[in-house]
Image (cartoon, rainbow, N blue to C red; front, side, top):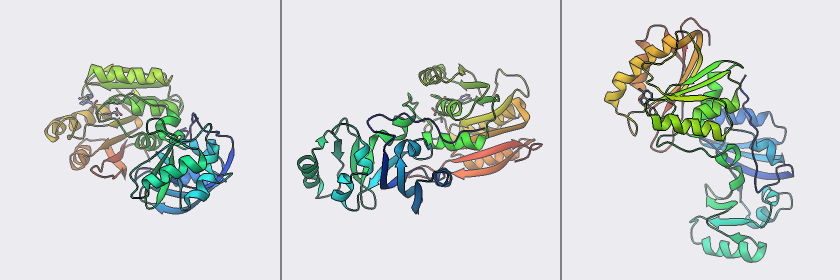
Amino acid sequence: MTHTRGTAVLRGVDGDRDVTDRLLLRTVPGAVDYLFEDLRALPGAVVVARRPDGLVVDWSGPLRELASIRYFATCAVVLDDVDARVSAPGGAVSALTGPVRFRVAPVGEERWELRDRLVEKYGWVNDSGDWAVNIDHDQGLIAELGPLFYPRRFGELTRAPASTNPVVAAVMVRLAKIEPGQVVLDPCCGAGTLLVTAGQMADPGVLLGGDLRDRWAMASQENLAARRVPGLALMADATMLPLPDASVDRVVANLPFGKRIGSHADNQRLYPLMLRELRRVLRPKGRAVLLTEDKRLFTQSVQRTHGLRVVKEIEFTRPGAHPSAYVVTSRRSGR
Ligand SMILES: C[S@@+](CC[C@H](N)C(=O)[O-])C[C@H]1O[C@@H](n2cnc3c(N)ncnc32)[C@H](O)[C@@H]1O
């Protein structure tokens, strides 16, 4: 079973205090439905607007409940009336502990007047390096809450150049439907975002990572250790895995897209060989969730790999990138 909600660490905010506020939860397109579903399970949330990259929510309850949701990256107070919102006795800002440290992003002419007002009227401390509130603009003024940023809640990881977005990783792990005790593999693990997320959201029996480059296998191992997730990452080639036939239940991987990592020509060799290898190591009811932007090559390679098929695609479009996560199963298994 996958635990869609996790145990969030909250620093700099009283997560147990009841607050009532209008909040913007920003995520990646492709994750909005999952965010919506998790919010529906919380009695304190009423979704008032849906955007391609998030939801506006009227929240009433402790922030800890909200913080446990993995499908949003940032949480901001919607400042439709700045003075009313920042000073509201039961608003989200009132749950911040200690003097409010803040910065104001370039939000137009009002930037400096706003900064001075927050210092003079409310005693906030302007600190662009160590802030709990970031005043920004997103279809109106918002106040992003630093303690609710995803890496602050679930732990910062050492990143590889093409590390997986953590919200995308959470959706992929959910799509993988990992059951307790299963063997889970990421054959292109990079710095291990997917491995750590799988270990946190599910209860795999064995968690394995492989990367062609020793450096990234080691980074994965360090990230697993730092988050106290039991797992093993080794240098290995995804086209020649040191694993027996039918030994893996679930695969999650962010493949080289052929842009920043590798090239389309590299992928023309890698994808067919890797898919054949995944078919070999996957158990009959195995399932793989694979992220790529080299989509046509990927889907053609799956079609040409006897015994595998794509059963679902989720696109995570954002500026400059539009990768998809493909759920691939063995033809013998059901959805
Ligand atoms: C997109 S990155 C993975 C990012 C990773 N999920 C993370 O969050 O850090 C792709 C990784 O695949 C690795 N790779 C490329 N070809 C490979 C192969 N044949 N076998 C194993 N790993 C490979 C690269 O070294 C790179 O670390």
